[in-house]
Amino acid sequence: MAQINVIGSRGGRSIALDLPEVNPHVLHEVVTWQLAGRRRGTASTKTRAEVSKTGKKMYSQKGTGNARHGDRSVPTFVGGGVAFGPKPRSYAYTLPRKVRQLGLAMALADRQQQGKLVAVDGFDLDGKTKSFVAWAKQNGMDGSERVLVVTDDELTRRAARNVAWVTVLPVAGLNVYDILRHERLVVDAVALEPAQDEGGAEEGAAQ
Image (cartoon, rainbow, N blue to C red; front, side, top):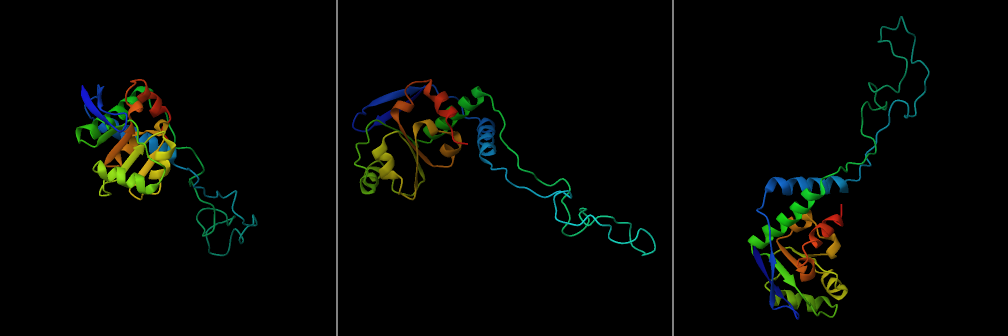
């Protein structure tokens, strides 16, 4: 059972979380699923039926000494259609809900084990970037690490969004990929306290 200390104006307590042992394979599966869902899938090539070429036979069937061709749109010619080329498609696939929840719990466990998980109850910022930078410095964040701030506090999000080394997400957007690509995680305490919120946060993960 991991004990996470809560800081902030309404902090001064700890949250007990039953976090699993980190399994890199599960984290890989969840991150791959997320990134697959984010792929645009807009690559497209023209088939021989779609290229702008005449359908007239190029030259006589016999007597020219050349191979027997009848259409310039075939893939063997420059400017012809592409055989088996990419077409617009979705790369998204389904990953079991329990695996997604487990991956999120493991990502939190990884940051907690490294001492990089910060739970906050009450930022009390005024929406100014300067105030967030001062708050971050007081809590050991000086810009040497990339920080993910997960909060529904609008003033805090406004204050942090212009800081180059900070990424801001709402609580519903908490996801494995963004946790792992930032060295430090700063999250609203309310997102950690109810156990069922972990599943809800993963459902809202941006793809």
